[in-house]
Length: 423
Image (cartoon, helix red, strand yellow):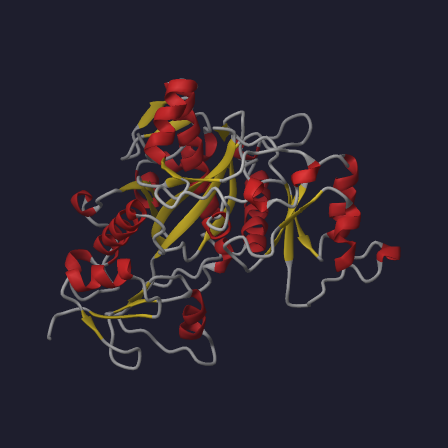
């Protein structure tokens, strides 16, 4: 068995195991010597914990960064993006420019968000400025739509408050923190239904930042037509696109799973809105992703044994403005349809080709810059070394109206700055 990659996983999904077996890799237990471990977020905590963690050798790699939660916990993502904005303001970066109302012109890509219980009084102050608005509450550390609900009255969250007289907010559980965000109540609708985008982004290193966009993302549609009516606030089949929610709906289609490919969305938008505005939209989506990664890069533990494939959730409003909703550390590898299975198998295949070059024993000392021919359906989204090498990164941060080609070459475009344009 000499020379063969030894793998372990605690996520028993066929799209993973079939990929490992196709490469002729050898399965071992977590207590044996292993080279590659595709692990859950719970396991990664143990591997890198101060008490139970252990030192990884140069021939071992894992699929999460130790503190990935700086991006993938809803509250920490927002906190880091807010800090990033403040830092750019201090630098007098044009990216931090604001309009006459104090709103960011370029960095306004996350809905207005507060942490609860910590920011309860700030939230109440904002809520009262526009008491007709709708807000969405989400537990910080949960996924698949669990624990989410919508509110349009302060009284609807009083049950979480033990001391309403002083307007202080006390969580039922000291462990359960929530984020509350202004609900995007003007989503772009197709066939009358709300949808979001699930996009896959691979980060091989944070310092220098190098990330890849997977071209085969998809849209997830609600099964019930959208209505902003307050009488529908409790109907999650109207508001939440999560498959874990929608698959229980009466109108769920088990053949296509309520999904569209991103390429179909692009064709639809080009035919209904025009090619130029569609290209601008996708450029802005890529720009948002790069900025979110830049926001967390300084605080991310850039362990050389790590890579990560994130699931980005983006909502587009009816003005074709994209909004970053959240980032998932363990995007679902469950296949709800045949096309889903193919997509996710190919996603893992292409991810492994980048993370484990040539399917050989990993070496953490390599520079993590694979040749273009092994990228498969990935495209380089941002490469900090290339950008800094020709001064493009300076332009990226100072000229929001300029788009950069794949190798840092400048090209005029109606979209914002990003290192590659996904066509």
